[in-house]
Length: 204
Image 1 (tube, rainbow, N blue to C red):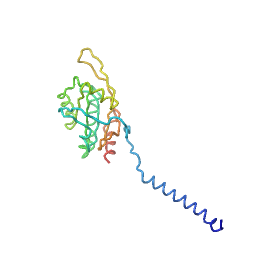
Image 2: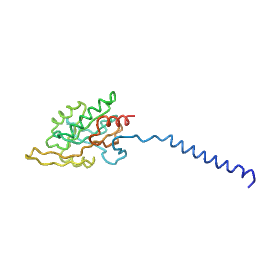
Image 3: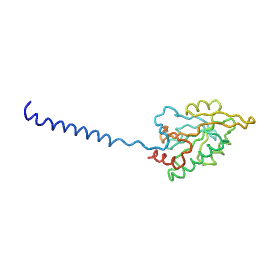
Image 4: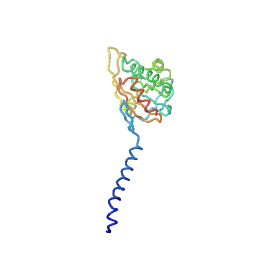
């Protein structure tokens, strides 16, 4: 090796290192930071993919029907004393907090008590919170399947009379983005502001 080659070798190595450093820095700069959601980020989950149930008007609804909107799917029943009305009221408040984007939020209430929750009762129930809210009523045969698909728990707890039973059920909800992909699991009691903050991130 000549003296000239030995002289330039260290400089060539440094230039190579600098070029590699710049390339890596460029990759870091180009990658977007992961959103800091307050809910549980379940992006890419292989469950909670589809709904195919009749709504409070007897019309069969699917997730694709709400394309372009954020969809929040919550399982409950109309005689639920606390968790269900609290969640529904929070979603109504979230619509208000979103301001002009409030019309991009679609709440979907799925009953786990189809025996007592008639379509008429469901219609009155959801519209009591917001006229745009949708209620879905699976048949007794469909309910176990949809519960398995969404990984939710429900169990009938017998009361003093045949019709005074209650329903134990999961308290969280799922949020789908405007392309119909499941993105978040919302814990019960997060509060309207926390939900609104997450929804604003999804709408960006």
